[in-house]
Length: 443
Image (cartoon, rainbow, N blue to C red; front, side):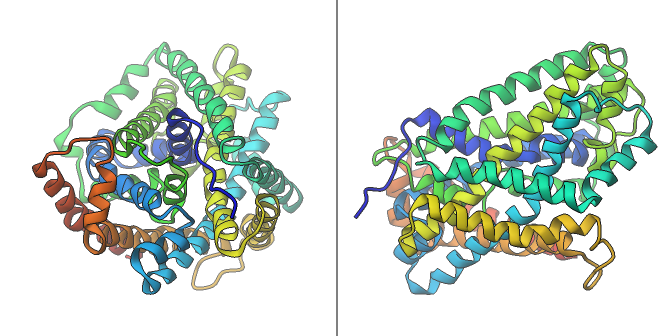
């Protein structure tokens, strides 16, 4: 039997896991959610929830992977028995469906990076920007071609051993991502009027808090840490025996939360400085930001840096999603990593084509009001991810608590009171979070 691969270092594991969690969420989703939900009314609850319940959820999933030493299916069978195996298969399917539509967005990031590199990323007219986005996402050849390139890059990285592919990539891309973000933040904060963007994000304004902003913060806490489908469980399974899990999880949550805040700082001050709409929604990144770059000195450089950030972030998340399915084929079906990576990428591409075409030829081909892209997003974000998260909380906090407690305390002397609080959060507060996400998402 081939010995299971492990991370070469703790730093590699933390950076890879933080990269999986950061993804497009920090740079693409967090700014537009903050802009659409009152700024600080969304940001402050998110930070609080991420550092508490988010930390508990992430720790539970990584620790279960550490205990199971295998893919999500292997772990569910080993720790919960045969009745939990369907939960593992749900995670495998979720990873495939998420990557099917995520790879379409990843393709867009490469397209915009190419545009920026050749000098076509500086357009001030919003109508032209909207037309450009439609041209990229609605042209079947461009959309599918860039999606295939994005998946090929992902599969090539995953095909290598964990410590040679994913870990080495993360050691390069994560520091590069933070450096590029800081460069853009410094430039944005020096613009006249940028202070209004800071006040919008961080000033405590009780009147701005709404039930909708709290639900949005709940949902993004769940989304941003990449819990529920098994990615973090898979990464946890590669931890060497004796690893100090709690400290690593705290560092991952800290980096992920920091990246989201930096993502907002990268976008909002510039948006306010140029009088643009902070509530522009999902198009804030692809339609609003190029107008900002067009008005900046050396805007071409900043456009390249911004879309390089997007592409890097997308890639660090996509490798974790593909690794989830590759680990299943390797552990459960005996595949080699290279063949498993190619097969999984092909399966994702087969489903992902329909997601890419959802903005072109299939834009009007809807079932119950949704096109293929929207169905993949809806089924995973509102059903399988919350259900997977609920299963993680119950398995860790109820069905295998004694063994879980011993594993999570590895290398640490945890007080009894801390363990009781952790279990209450895991078995009461976390399920409430999941059910709230589930109900509001379905509603």
